[in-house]
Image 1 (cartoon, helix red, strand yellow):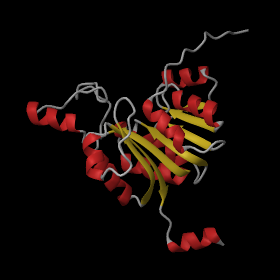
Image 2 (cartoon, rainbow, N blue to C red; image 1 turned 30 degrees about the vertical axis):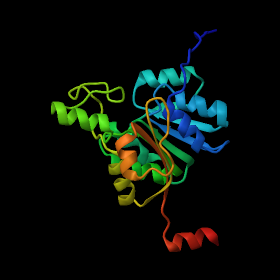
Image 3 (spheres, rainbow, N blue to C red; image 1 turned 90 degrees about the horizontal axis):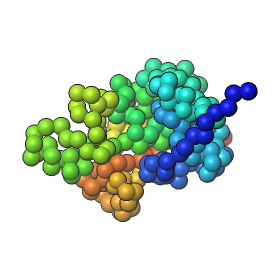
Image 4 (cartoon, one colour; image 1 turned 60 degrees about the vertical axis):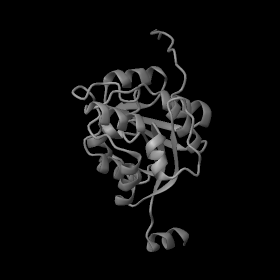
Length: 221
């Protein structure tokens, strides 16, 4: 009989806690780019979700399976098209969209696969990043963006304002949005988009696909 060494878990990531607040108990969840399965584990324990994961790295898949999670190896850029429409209640992408090659296509697939899409990402519009670019003229390195530009996996960094613009382009309705700093202090609910873009280090958005009048009527029938 094979025995497994115990898996030691660290404190939940701040964006994972905000994501968990947006997920209804007992939901069907697909976590895309799930890493070591930390978010799926949190959702299974606190929200009793029926969770599945997709992760590009073999190490991440192995770590997730060691937690007892259902995770397969796959690439968000190429494999999401294989999933049927509305297969999950929530399709989640946490701190991964900036590392995809085709963020717009990935977001469109998330909105197709899930009734809701939840996306978290680092905000490149934060004031410290703006300051460092202004003063040094070089790509900044921060706690949220720790790698130098030439080795960073982040191919498409964006600001909160950029992401809101992308949501409009793919006809996504922003159901809920939270901007927060590194210790998890969220900005006031009444903060304007420009203030969120200036002061938020990271953001989490819960989105749904806008319905046409015809679709609304069909659902209401």
